Image (tube, rainbow, N blue to C red):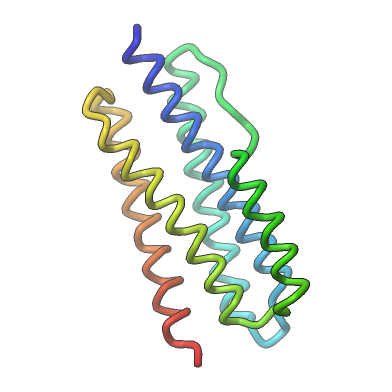
Length: 151
């Protein structure tokens, strides 16, 4: 029973951080200028991926007979508030938006690493997390490469 509770807690934490990622990328997309259509499309894709992740995680929680989370994490809410303050002082340039997105990607990447470090997770849950982690890592690397490429 403790393993099930721990698995559900892990899944719910990942649901919340995926919801944070959705909100973060949607917010970042709104901050972009018209000439940043490439980033807007990328951010929309990443938000879509995280919606799929959250839905898959919610289904896994329901399979364990529990009620899945639907909100955001406290740290995600704080990060978005910091983004608001920072945007007021630094503007909405491409590099600063990419830097903030990379910070968010670092957080979700770490969350998946920590979740997968738990060797008590059932294999079906581990398989879901590994597949999602791969896409999260790819997203992180893409954001980092774009940030590194901005003068």
